[in-house]
Amino acid sequence: MASSPPVLSTRVLLVCAAIGVATGILGGIAGWVTVPVITGPAFLYGLVLGSHVLPGIIAQEVLRRPLVAIVTHVIAALIASAFNPAWAMRFIGTALLFGAIQEGVAALTRYRAWGAWRFFVSAAVIGVFVAVVVFFAAHLSSRMLWEQIAYLIIAVLGPIAWTAVGLGIGTSLSHAGIARR
Image (cartoon, rainbow, N blue to C red):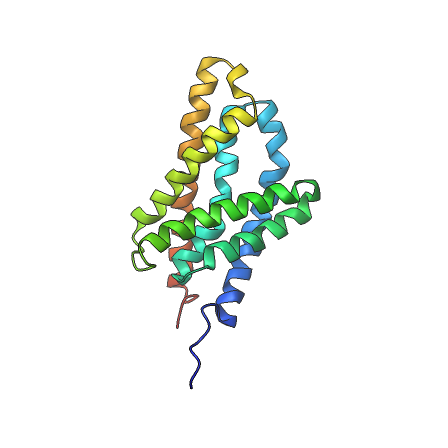
């Protein structure tokens, strides 16, 4: 009996690793600026946290396969953890959450719909979830009303904006031949 090819071939894993390393460096930088942003202009935190959508978006845009978002997110989290080991569990938790949401939305379309709309749906789900959780976890209700409103808007739009960036990068990588079969 002939075996079927693996879902995650060596080539796919290597592409996930390359994307994970590059986006993990960005994630490490985002980790460094988190505390100054939360204690200062907290309403901008959605832009910082939104950058963590990049690993899965780029991987799914380039490879268009199951599991690439979650694998790439975990690799990126491990790289980001090297920059700030104290935040390792936060990086990994964020990677698993964001990767699961991105994989879940792709699975709902049976990994057949790869239009930009699908990526933006996952970004909106992430944005809304993160906006609510961080609002309460960071006690943003103690901030002035305009900051609370600005935070909620930016927290939802941050992942959406980073998704647009990720789609642009993924498309460029595909045009460069990264996704050739």
